[in-house]
Image (cartoon, rainbow, N blue to C red; front, side):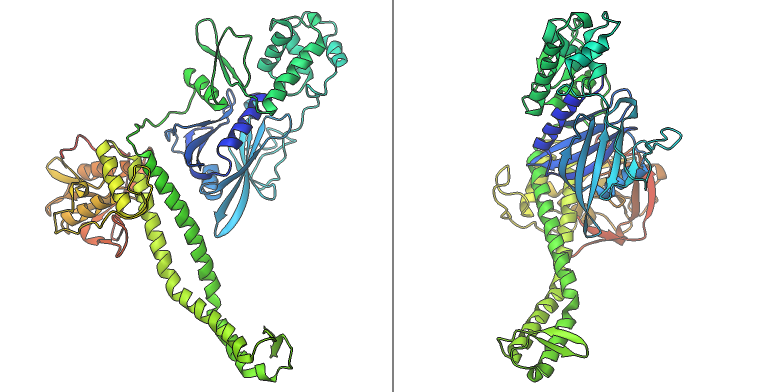
Length: 585
């Protein structure tokens, strides 16, 4: 089954009402021709799925996060991560009577706001997802179309994006009964829905059959037996309801109870049908029951959602703060220039004619206020110099603190995704309260910290929540931090020659092998690396890079939130992420 114009119109309204204005947090590749975008909007997290498979292309929203089943990093995926991830979804549009959705995204790239468009063409075997820049040039696409495939419309990087050619057939509001009657011609025994579909744009097989059913009482009524004005009136009524948002998403079933079709309107020609709240829910249910849906990551609700929401809100605040500080930093770069101009005002201001608003010095123009004294004008420049000089001294430290807290939030977010028990959530909840990210109530009503974390002596921690997970692999003790405090505690418990492992370049758990100075077999190191990868942002990858070094080369970052370190002298191994094998706590 393919999505028709009416269904795509319903989806466009649904997407606009649900996620437009939201931030695109992640981009995943759940399948060969599938891309999934995690969007955080209005305090909720949704996944926008775009599937360009020729046999069943579709777009829909879902609450369920798909598993990363395809680890192939394509050129398009890299560009999406650069130009779309962490951007804002500004708008979603649909050209009239076309099976095309265009998503406008604004993202910050190298300190500039860059606009791109994601064009989802949901058109059967020619379906595609195309990334287009603000000048209308293709950056890349899911399917590249060269001249050997289509001489008239190529879809290639660095080529102008050309929309699909419009259909020459009139839409149901423009079609005339005489045209339909003439199309019946010498074949009056053909079904009326085929004539409607062939003579108008926007009417796919399902909508055409439902239209004829509503007009005549039977979906297979012959073309010679219909009043074509009644058919057009039924089609116009259905499109008007969808365009006005009067949606009744429907999932239809056959006599055996198997799913047969979905639509944004009631499928009255099916005796068995059910209504749903969202068009996306109907599409998702249809393909899930047919066994053609991206695999989902299986998660349990352990109470982590309020914590994830609080982290997202804090990370949004930190991004805004970082941008403001960056602007201050750039603005403060010319501090000495303001001091120099102040000196020039003092040196030459007394020779300027009364009432003049500028000073000319060696071809340079310096603006002054003719209503105040020379000393006051110089003071304006010196005050600006002092502010900028102070910013030069203060902003780098403020930026480091913002970056440090952002890194901590990313670490906490990764650890939250890997929680396995209510106890894991309880530990992270207390830590987020302690860091001032989550308030005292369950949903974080206040950001007042609840107290300081005790430092403790070597091998001891402030409370049970700061104890890392401990278990054994063939006689070697393994410590895994499942929170920032547990990461710190694992470092304190380890000796200088113990091995420290961490997923490369992403937030996650610290994993330590307490070897007691002995050599550790490679298979144990690989198994510990699998665990380090699993409790990180790479847990759903089919393979992940993990850094390994001695504990002596790992240093806590001074005055930073718990769990943040720098390290050196590492080597890197690639493993498949795996969870802890029955830990002994």
